Image 1 (cartoon, rainbow, N blue to C red):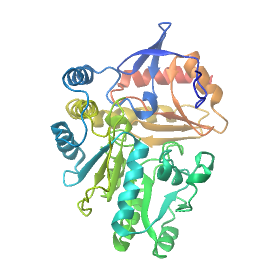
Image 2 (cartoon, rainbow, N blue to C red; image 1 turned 30 degrees about the vertical axis):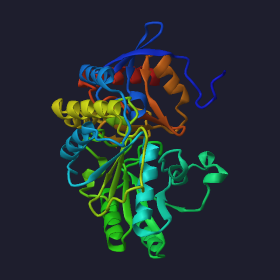
Image 3 (cartoon, rainbow, N blue to C red; image 1 turned 180 degrees about the vertical axis):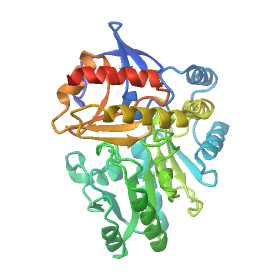
Image 4 (cartoon, rainbow, N blue to C red; image 1 turned 45 degrees about the horizontal axis):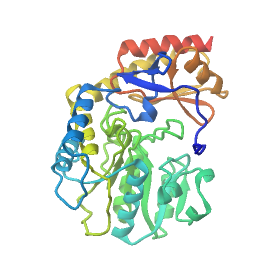
Length: 374
């Protein structure tokens, strides 16, 4: 049986990882400034992570959510303390798309409305509701096109107010930092205005922190730079460091009703063991502070390089925009300089390294990056 073609693949077979480095099956070492798409938060093969998952797998890998799982409460307590959201409730699922899907459902259950405001260049996932609030017609199948979403320009608070005034908007969903959209950062003022208009109208404000959360921006959640507190927050990717897990943080304003939400694999024992190891490591190794410091250093050094149109980012979520397509630059980074990077559209290189990236490794990247631009 052949594999279904999903992505165009680089001809590199990665078989090993440690920290911010990976190796292919030929023994070639690569510097990882991509983190498997912002997934690897505490570094590849972190000893605590490996030990915790191995120990849990040897004890119990899975049982259903029909019985008590004390690991779930341990993760909830840890996440609440580290993030500052200990008064919220936590719902476990398996991915970012599922997190956004359930966030939108919760909003609609609460206020009975069904239209959503999302933003240009947004990416929220590929499941039914998540893909409908994603600004990419190519991935929206006819069965997903239900007309529930109005896409606005980021920053257009008057347009948002006008749409909400129509009375049928259940939620506004926005990324803490747009990733696929090119590392676009909503202004603090705009996020504050969004919270105010949502609070005044009974509209749910959903912050998608799938990619920008878990310390990546130099705060636990990127929206915390704006000093706001949304109704629902979604998180995945970095909280599992490679193990599939997603979570929804839910305001106390929402009252749980049995049967509204459910999951088979969400919050399973292995997933919780992974998340607990990740959160403990982020806290004990001061990785949020490291992301802020190393990210600031990277941006400072990147600004010195000629030929770049714009540098955008916070912490270790950085976009490097060029006037021309960057396909060849990225290819040379990978095959000549052995550096993994991400991409947004055709003109933006995206850096999403593990939060363990050191100043020395950042400088190593800068040196290799300069060479491909000569």
